[in-house]
Image 1 (cartoon, rainbow, N blue to C red):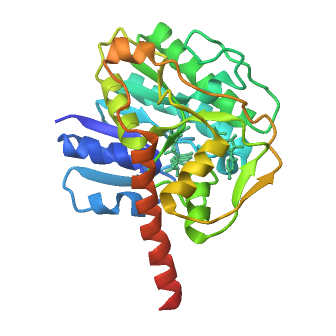
Image 2 (cartoon, rainbow, N blue to C red):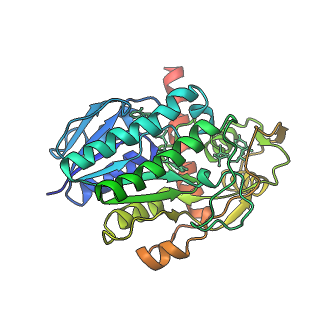
Length: 319
Ligand code: NAD
Ligand code: UDP
């Protein structure tokens, strides 16, 4: 049985990853400081004999014995990572150093949850892995973008210097059940607003694009990456190349929820990328992976999830 550490395991992606690892028979240690994650996301695993939850901040060293490490700890939503930007950089950089140090001591294979944000506001479209990006080093998104870029540097230096088995995966916008309702990301915002009959907040003119990957597809890609041959380090893009403007996304959410919410326009946040779409040729070739879930099907699942928690919250307030 493999002993697997998932940092950030009580978060949105981490909790789905823990589910998949437990289902395939691994022994899972989930470490999280609960900044944006929650025990609720993994509470269904508490009674499982091969699951263990530990409160731990990755900016501090961790001494455990494991065979594989998935390093996901880091707030992902701009609202959350900009709340305490210094801590965000520390989480990416000190967190990477600590987890790489752990991997080196126990000779574990380690995967980094990197991000499409390493491409910044890209001039190359779609973005292939060879593109070095256009990132503002001093803006409000920099704590996240530069933190993740530095983490990639550390991963490759540990690989070159210490011969560590590394896997670097650049995740593009992913959505699905267990996103935090107040997370501030576009999919959760639009769905919650539509279900509550509130105005849909479009930032800027809504013509900026993103490519949305359903969580099940993403986790499948992550497992394929971890299990790929040792010589394949990445970086590899994992995401869904279907590209939509935020206006198109809003209209799709309104259609699927049957909501009559109005669209309202708010200022575009600083350094908000104009366009984003992964080139996934490398993932297809090296991992035999590609996404399967359409935006419509993924949104339906996500809408059902949010409908459930919103109804539950109303019930809790009434009773
Ligand atoms: P999330 O905010 O739901 O999960 C992050 C988890 O990390 C949370 O449980 C949080 O409590 C934990 N955490 C934060 N700081 C920590 C620290 N110092 N020590 C220990 N735990 C800490 O976000 P997510 O969407 O699940 O993202 C998971 C990872 O994937 C992140 O590294 C993120 O950068 C990356 N990623 C996600 C997306 C996406 O669209 N979801 C896109 C690109 C990259
Ligand atoms: N966005 C929006 N309304 C919202 C939240 C976000 O129009 O309520 C826009 C945001 O400006 C960005 C896109 O949606 O252009 C994706 O934002 P998100 O925070 O989900 O992810 P990221 O910008 O990190 O890709």
